[in-house]
Length: 86
Figure 1 (cartoon, rainbow, N blue to C red):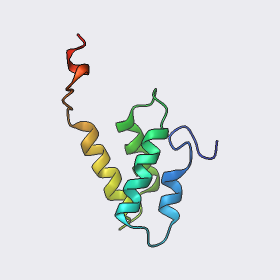
Figure 2: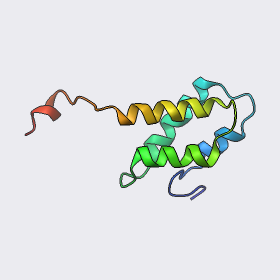
Figure 3: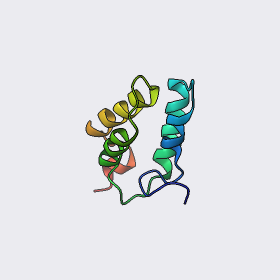
């Protein structure tokens, strides 16, 4: 494992080390990170931990992680077959 349990591929850490990275690139990296996160971890807590760990003034990944926190905290409507399972 290249990173740790919170950032298995060290994607977030590496994003903060890339000079001139754009918000679009950060969103792409965030999506890859979210897909590689173990199911047993709470995504909201993990995003907050990574933001505390890596936050750098003016870095676009800060905004992406903040957006991730806001999105995770909003209730999601489940539609389609998943809503009718019960």
